[in-house]
Length: 145
Image (cartoon, rainbow, N blue to C red; front, side, top):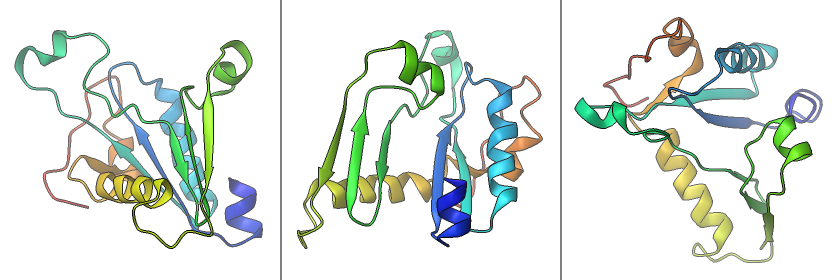
């Protein structure tokens, strides 16, 4: 990702989820990506918890695993960390519909989903969220970003 953004001057947007099971080290990594290149924009998606929802294990998270480029889309089942690709048997599909100008193909649909989440009120700039991570549930912006 750094090579693509820096050497090829391509804009990269990365939207990561933050929830009760997020390793705090992830925030350091995301912060470093954003500092590396102005072509890498990083946001963190936080689904707020209300009342008894906090008691439901493994919930209140945007757990999507996909990537969209200007030509193809990828959808997979594995978390995007090295250990998942080495120690688990996930599945992934690549959709190459670059010859399609249809707004209904899978790549366009995934791009629309990504942009909806990117512009959502639950999407927070990593710099703003970084300081709130000290083991506490982060504050969610009430203003769309």
